[in-house]
Structure formats: C-alpha cells, structure tokens
Amino acid sequence: MKKTILLLIMFLILSECIGQNKKEKKINDSTISHNFNASKTLYYDIENKTAFTTYKINNIGQFTIYYFAKNKTDLDYLKNFESINKIEAKYDELNDLRYFSQKQQKEINKLLQSRLKNKKEFILLGKFIDAKYLNIEDKNEYSIIFPFKLMLYKFEKGNTWKFIKSINIKGYNDEVKYSNLNYLVKEVNGNNQKK
Image (tube, rainbow, N blue to C red; front, side, top):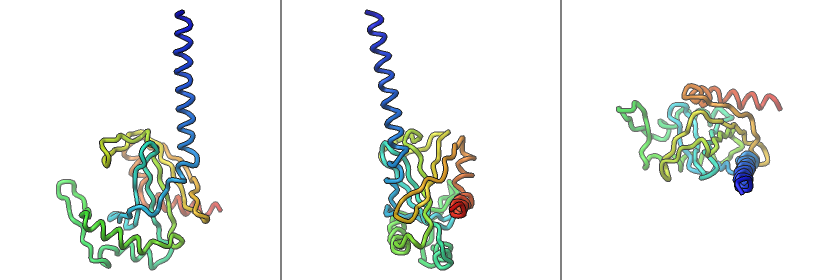
C-alpha cells in the first residue's frame, strides 16, 4: 500500500514538472513575438532621448519596445522633443529624477503616436522578461527579481519579431549595463550587419 501511494505521489510530481516545462516552452516560442504590441501607450525617455512603450501581460511577462530613429529629422525631433513640444518635465528632489505628470503623459502619447505611426522610419528593439521573474505587488505595480533572463528581439519586415539574443542579468549593475541605450543601439546595428 505504501509503495502504491509513493508511486502515485511520484507520478503526480513528474506529471506536474512535465506540464510546467511544456507551459514554459509555450511562452518561449511564438507567444513572446506575438505579444509585442507597438501600438500601446508611448512614453518619452528623458535620459536617453527616445520613445518607448512598456507593459506587462499577466502570466507571460514584461514587454518593452524602443524606437530608434533611422533618419536625422526623427533623431533631432526625439533629441529635442521637450523643447519642440514645449513640455517641461517635473522634478522629484527626493529621488533626484525628472518625470512627466499624467496630463503631460497623455499629451506625449498623442504626439508620439502621431509622429511614430510609420514604423518603417524607425528601428524597433523589443525586450522581454518572463513573468516568473516578476514580483507582482498589485494590478499596476511589480518589480523584477534578480537574477533574470532578458531576451532581445528586433522588428523585421513582414511585421515579425526576430529573436536577437538572451542575456543573463545577475544584478543591478548588469541591468544598467544591458539596458543602456548605447548597448541596445550596438545590438541593433550589429544585428543589421549580420544580414
């Protein structure tokens, strides 16, 4: 009787592990590329002078898309976005950072959606972090748990997202290094040269 119960428990554990592996594989295959959505709310990155969108899909993960200008006109527009559109960021002295109010963000989204509607004029780079690395605090609040795997994708002709590489992020310094705009631009340019 004990052997039967033990075998049953082992079978259930093994079944659960196999099921979990299949679920993870499903997320890692086409689910990621099918969930990159460049039409989400657009934000302006004050530090890097570029546009991006970021969002979380429950049980899948965090998606971020950066827009890199291909031509000088769009590059200058993003570089001088605040002055051109007469939008002045607020300053948070406690955290020593600049930010936009919700009202400003609505206007920024409208301006960027209009300017960036032709995706062919921009190089789109996507970052994905699996939900298993997200600590969900509430509906809108979450944090990323170290270490985690960062996956990079590039938007290609034919409206597809091509996997570029996977990076193991061990801690905060790695996150800063691999989220740096210069690093991301090199990845995009390096990927263009491989074609």
